[in-house]
Length: 216
Image (tube, rainbow, N blue to C red):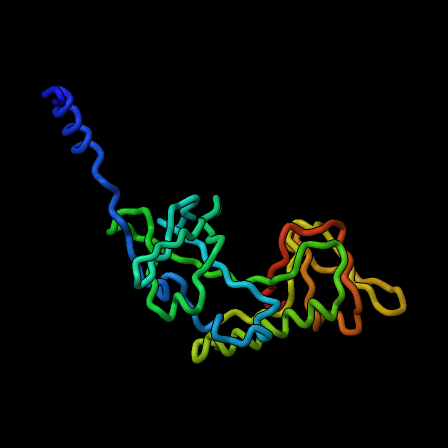
């Protein structure tokens, strides 16, 4: 028999530590445009990556416990890194089957989702211009297809950025070079600004290769 004092202690713990409510949302709403992105032919998105970051009050929700709940009740963990970004995303089949996103947060918590569009280019100190130009071209074409009527409002990717690469040059067939423009310590390359260039050489490998969306 459990002593009366022990029963009282258990009751106090139960009152003091209520279960955390679960916040549920349709995966298609939590990951906007992901379904359209995945429906595009693989060859049309081979150079691109779509990412999502959860935010609350404008700040990333880091290391949050999240899971994908399918119609049959199966739960698949969706790890969230220390920057609030999902390390794995739902598949097209899961989205089409009506899977939902479960977050270890109160049901009334206001959570936002920030979408990011990036390249599949790996950090390196040297790139072929043809590869960079093909990546920019594919991004422009796919955004137009995925965004549909909203394409006019979507950012226009005109080049690539090399985060923390310090500086770089575009190299031409005759060996001549032209410095890349930079934003702080992030140089960027716009194919239209370096007609005839064949390579891009950076001072150091970037931490990330993203897209440049400004005209100039």
